[in-house]
Amino acid sequence: MIKATNISKNFGSIKILKNIDIEINTSEITVIIGPSGSGKTTLLNCLSMLNTPDKGLIQIDGTRYNFPNAHAKIRKQFKYKGSQQVGIVFQNINLIPNWTNEENITKPLLKTNLFDKSELNNLIDIFKVKSILHKLPHQCSRGEQQRIAFIRAVMLHPKYLYLDEVTSALDPELISILFNYLIYLKSKGTGIIVVTHFLLFAQNLADKIVFINQGEILEQGTKDIMINPKTSQFKKFLMSLENVIITNNNIE
Amino acid sequence: MLNTIEIIIKYREDFLIGLSVTIQMTIIIWIVGVTIGSILGILGTKYSRSIGLLSKIVSFLLGGIPVLVFLYWLHYPFQTILNIQIDGFYTTILTLSILNIFLVAEQVRNAVEQFPRDYIDSAEVCGFNSNEIIRKIQFPYILRQILPAIIFIQVVMMHSTLFASLISVDELFRIASRVNSEIYKPVEVYSTLAIFFLLITLPITGFAYWLRKRYAFIK
Image (cartoon, rainbow over all chains, first blue to last red; front, side, top):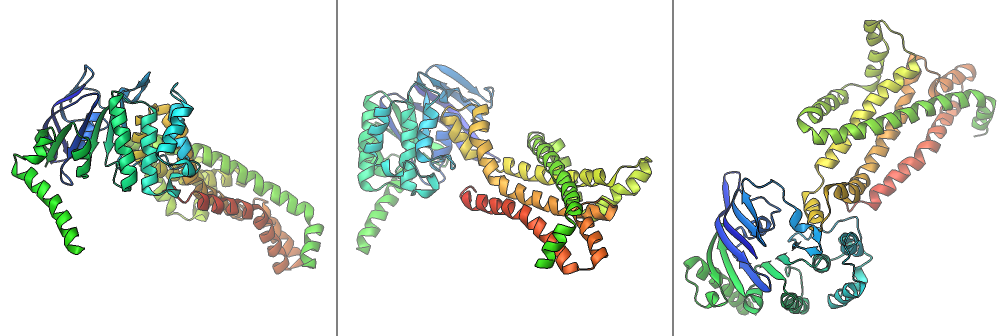
């Protein structure tokens, strides 16, 4: 379990996260939703400890990191010890630009004993990336890069997988494929945390939904919180998404 | 054209001596500049408030001084002040090596400093350690990015060796001037000189342009 207690993060004088408490469990999909600039990505980066929280406690499977006393740069959660503890698919994707897509997937595996050719081929088929493996990332669309980044992360068998806006450039068919694969990963025991604007994620997959606004978690719970939102901010957020659908219908 | 060939054949030994001096100076300037410049650039990023700042200031000052003035200053007043006498060949190497070192250091420092943080995060998340990130990701990326600029600097350094003729170094330009003073055929003589430089620098600049185009996606 990953447990964060009283996490705060400032950038300069701007408070991005305010006293966040959150738990991420294995075999569970946690979806973080909220308006743009609410601190979702910062929360994800703090939970992975890519960004160091200014204060608070993060426990990953019992190992405690107490901030600000903990070491400024903790990276052992990404190291390979049989499998990886935390894996991330970034919002900006961040494939290494001078490696081919295939190298982006395989080079991290070469230092592990995880290079399972059949698993890789299976993922290549599922996510339809065979034709772009030899290409460099800049020669591919954003959606293709997103799929490569996802395969790269999954191949390292992370115990906890963090996905930041991973569906932003995928078409409906690929989103459906991704959903099914996430359900499969969850059944294998992976704890998945998803940051998204895409409410279908929350509606279809989430075991737990976390609504964050202006750096504070205002609501968290099962899917029911979307049916009966308690705070006006969450209601407003859900209404705004409804308005987008209504507006689109009106255009038609 | 025939005259040019005749001049090359007649004065081939002189031209070969000049070419040899030019190439010797160029190679030393390249090796010293690229090696020490790269080290200085890397140290400049690591110790940005000491070495980095000093390197920036020196580069800024050197950038404002014409090469010829710097060469003359090191050849005349500097040696007078220290009461030493250094051959023009070595003074030229010293002058251009100093320039090359700081120009290369600036390129390296900028490239290392501007290396996208996102790629380091990405590599760390993939389990790479610091050494692996430098060796497998940063170094090849930065090399591809800065190589064209460094090659162009080296071509400029080679061209700048012509200034050595003004402090009596028998390099290619001085030989050409001497041949011209004997036969007074400036078009043919200086065309010969241009051909020598084109033959050497065209493949190098062509390679730099190719690299720049090939790796234009690396921003």
